[in-house]
Image 1 (cartoon, rainbow, N blue to C red):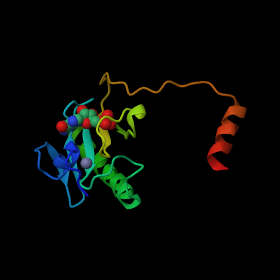
Image 2: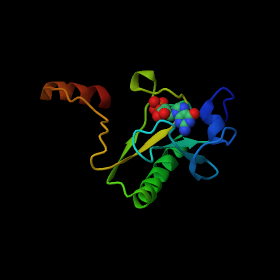
Image 3: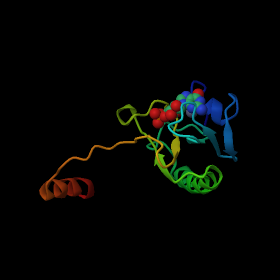
Length: 136
Ligand code: 5GP
Ligand code: ZN
């Protein structure tokens, strides 16, 4: 349930103080210490799961529902113009804390923040090969 060596377990369960903006039996939502934008928050399940691979399906569903609720409330309160949801799994994908978390990143006109993806070019054949690899 809880990993004694995990900082987000300690934060989620209140052993280490945090700027909490929401809490219920299963989740805590905290402000990120190094925010990408004003109001950048993290949804933390209280039970330890390393990432989405390990997260129970039911918790994953609840996390997404909570994200929607937080996005609506935070948009009202902060007056932001949009939102990014970001969720990193494994080091190669940028995960640095190995307790599942979902980033809620409010976006503002001219916030000068860039969460960039670099588009690449592929052929229809290449797309089809990938489609087959995933579905067959
Ligand atoms: P990741 O790169 O694993 O998806 O994101 C980890 C996030 O956790 C980063 O945005 C980082 O700023 C935040 N973070 C790391 N340690 C702490 C902490 O002790 N408290 C809070 N509030 N945020 C943290
Ligand atoms: Zn943990």
